Length: 81
Image (cartoon, rainbow, N blue to C red; front, side):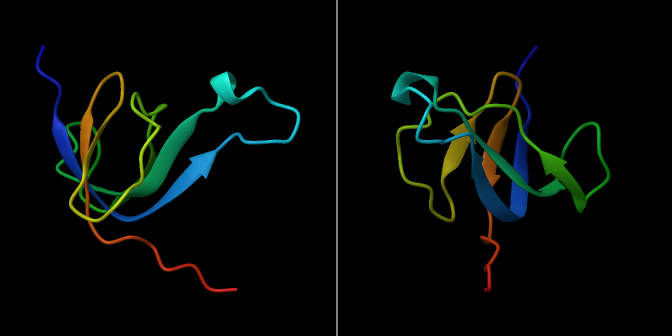
């Protein structure tokens, strides 16, 4: 089966980085609003599975891959403190 390509808006990067975790065990995933996902209505907040190529920077318009889907990165969530 072909992997779906989903737009993810208002996304943010999540990771399991700690000072006690070996770098090779680093996992990165995204949370955001999915558009065009085959299992969720548009705008539903999702958390992706682990990204396959996590050794890169992430910018609007990039395409990232998980085990089951491709995600096109829309606007990034602006975090305020």
